[in-house]
Length: 416
Image (cartoon, rainbow, N blue to C red; front, side, top):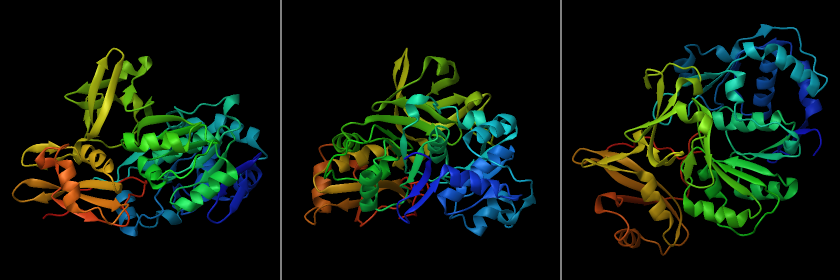
């Protein structure tokens, strides 16, 4: 797909790199704020700000006016414009020249998903946002399935990897399962990066696809059940699990659940009392209360597998643990147990506050068959989980609620 920049299978929109550079060359005003439901408009605005060497602030398309006021202090930010001289881009060589001249002045500001409160503002330089990007000849023919929100870190990492290699990007985020498979058959994309929540929407496995060469998962713990089924669906793909955050970008990767810290990063990573810390050199700029001197607490609970080389296993987010009568319960552990039960398509485990116990375990389940009952679930879990970990409230649902970044929403639910 030479020169094709962006494809939206849902509306059958196709934009070439020539279209992109021409559209940018016609822009005569600039606003630092970008808020759009169009992925193409977001990408265009990012590239435009980069060639100008100006800051860009990405707002989620579904941010309410109230959220924008809280985050920026001004409801009129999306109307701010400044007149500029157009940047004439005749091709990729012009783009690279502008970037070399202006990238040190450029800054991109994004917001965290806000799953535990008000989204946090984080700023990155060109070097920090593209730290994990690999550009060489072997990537020139990559075709990327884009299954992330483009205004968040994971989406930006995929965007820069694809764009800086002059690749084609195919929008998959929020598409129905059937449209995804239609796009895969039509465009034969070679690379796909998404959350485990997205991958579970593709299940059960009904056929296999050999065009996919690389599959990456990030944003949540990659459960073994989903991993094994994806190996069947995409038998030719190398599957990688990545650890990344809005504050630091991509840091670690693994072929399974064990992350290995590269030798050059060992002195910039610490694990204290099960909490993962990274040095300030690895993170962007933001107002933060999680710093201990020069070290940033990621809020992630991990289990050390070995000290040399340093490897660890992700357990859970510390603020997602459920306090049940003084016991700390990991919702991910319970999800994995329930997901392996016959008749379960997917599950989401969360806590609700309780005046007596502090919290109780609840879950929403999508079932494959009507014969699955609460009694069968509880009986099956007795041999796998301690009594206080077995959900007190089980609700059968048609779909699971996800955040604007495509992950499970683990905000603490209301009191029972």
